[in-house]
Structure formats: structure tokens, C-alpha cells
Image (cartoon, rainbow, N blue to C red; front, side, top):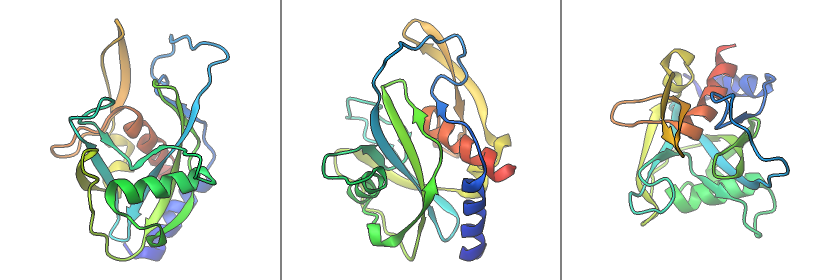
Length: 197
């Protein structure tokens, strides 16, 4: 698909209304504590001109979410003027994606995680060739999934597992050897719903 058409599709999706999401969407019985304080964070849903979404597989040595598939991103640091800056900085640190290669198109509604973050997913169009450089110690692998695959709601399933003594349900969108689930899959599902509308 030509880059101009890809950009137009993504901009149309961003313009559609939709609610915020959370890791608790499929678990309506969850009671969240009132007055909880969520930490701001951001991820980059980086889409290449070839129509692929850049994802990472986290190092199995990490304390939090080892081996899981994730977008480049993380918490907002004091040096980040905006959440968009945090997403771009993290993408450069984690996968070697230079910020001057990314055209930021906009953001999806925030996503609340079970770990206490309020994550803003930014969509960016990657210009030109991108040769990933995984951050040693944090990123085990950088890979790409076709946007057409993860923007099709039919490719998503609802699965579940035990967590803190209760069965918790979540979205999953497996692709080849990659098991994409949890917050990453939920944010992709939000994008898929908008692109399919």
C-alpha cells in the first residue's frame, strides 16, 4: 500500500471516537481501589512504510514482564517534555529508531495496566529504512507484524490464566512464533476496532 494511503488510513482510525481501555476490560468483576495513583507512560506503535508494526520481545532476564511481546516505550522521565517525547526516546533506546524518522500521527485513548501505569499509545509512521538495534539486556528481539494482520479484529481471541488467585481474561493475537497478549494486544485491538469501523 502506498505510504500516503497508509497514512490516511491511520489518521482516519485516530479520528474515530473510542473509550479508554484497561487490562481489566474483560474482567468486569474487578474492583479497583479508589484514589489509586497511576504513573504516566507511553508506547510507540511504529508503523513502517511497508505496512508493518514494530514490536519487541523483552529479555527473559528482566524482572518485569520477561520474554513478553511489547511496543517500544516506558515511563515518562523528568527529561521528557511530553509523553510523545517519552515514547520517541524509549523507541530510540530500545530498538534504535531515530526520532527524526518518525512522523507522529496522534494518540489512541489511554490504557490502564495492572502494574499501575496509565499508558498513552502513540502511532508513528516510520520514514525510510529502519535497521533495528536491540537494547542489550532489555530487548531480546525486534520483529515486525503486518498491520493488516493486527488491524483485523477476527485475528484476536479472548484467553485466560490464573493471576493472583483468580482467573483473568485478556486479548491475544498470536502471530507465527510470537504470542502477543495482555496490554499490547489490548491496545492493538483498540486500533483494530477503529480501522475496521
